[in-house]
Length: 242
Image (cartoon, rainbow, N blue to C red):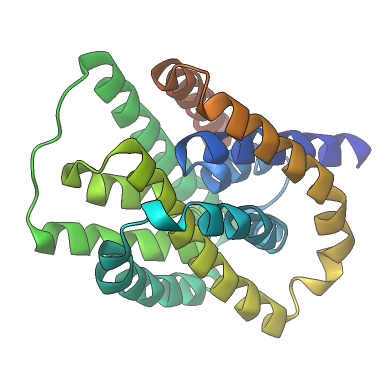
C-alpha cells in the first residue's frame, strides 16, 4: 500500500505542476498515472477536491486575464450540464469500460497534441455550434473522469486565445466545476473516507504549484508539452494492456 500512495503522490505532483505551467493537465495526468494503481472512481474523491486548493488561488491571482464572457456564457453552462450527465453515467458504467474509455481519450488527445507540436500548425476557425458541442462533451468527461480538459481544449483551440488568457480562463473553469463536483461527492459520502489522504497530498500540491509557477516563466512550453504528451501516451497504453 505504501508504494501505491507514493505513486499517487508522484501523479499529483506531476499533474498539478503541469497545470500550473499550462492551465490544464492536472487531472488528466494524475488520473492517467493514478489509474495504473487505483480504480478511477476511487481516485476522483481525492483528486477533485485537491484541484480546488490549487485552482482557487490561481483563479483569483489570474482573474484580470480571464475571458469572463467566454467563461460565463458558453463554457460553464454547457460543461455543468454535461458534467451532470457524466456523474450519472459514472455509477452505470463498468469499471473496465471507464478505464478503457479514458485510455482512448488520453491517447487521442496526446497524439493530437504531438502532431500539433510537430507541425506547428495554426488551428482553423470553428463555428460556435461546433465549439458548444465539444464543451458539452467536455462536461461529460469531467463527470466521468474529472478530466474534461482534453475535450475543452479541443473545443476552444480555434479561438486563438493568447497564452495568458487561455491559462487563466481554464483555471477558473476547473475551480468552479471541481467545487461543484466536490459538493456532490460530499453529499454522496465519497470524500469523507479519504479526507486524510487529501490532507497528506496538500504539501505535494504546494510544491507542485511553486514549481509550476517557476517553470511557467522559464521553460520552453513546447518542450514541456512534448514530454507530457509522451508520458500520457505511455500511461494510456499501460491502461489499455493492464
